[in-house]
Amino acid sequence: MLRKRTQARECALQILYQYEMNPEPMPEILKKFWSQQDEVFPEDVRDFAEKLALGTVEHQAEIDKVVERYADNWELSRMAMIDRNIMRFATYELLYLADVPPKVTLNEAVNLAKKFSQEESGKFVNGILDKINHTEKPKSPKDHDPSAA
Picture 1 (tube, helix red, strand yellow):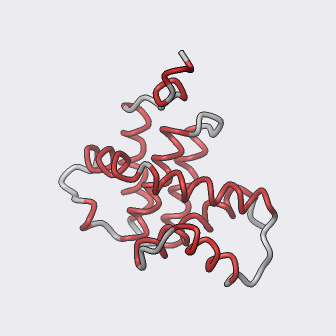
Picture 2: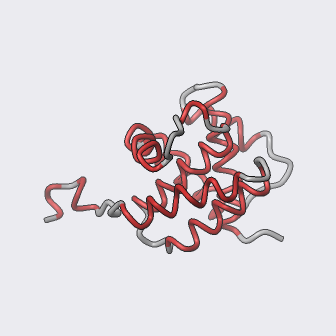
């Protein structure tokens, strides 16, 4: 059986894939996604999956710039959709979720790429995310809230 956060990441990947294929308002996509699932996910799995999906979409423009900066000779639009969305939410985790250890984020992203994408995707995703992890500074709440200083 998969760990809860692993399940949540798989759900987030599917949600983001649906969002990219058929860009509807995220609340609609979430409602449809959860209603179409054969299994009932625990609330904490649903909460983390939605946190990843919503956070990724909210910060997608910035995340896409970061991913492209480290994807040598690759445009985001030319990447496999699964790889692109894995890197998007993993970058969101690296930059915005201080409670998730970067090593866990990278390991989970690589495993998802190996499971759901092409044979070489694990190495591709790992290479880009590793550069992001070692170069980009996580965003602290202070970066977004002037009153937090």
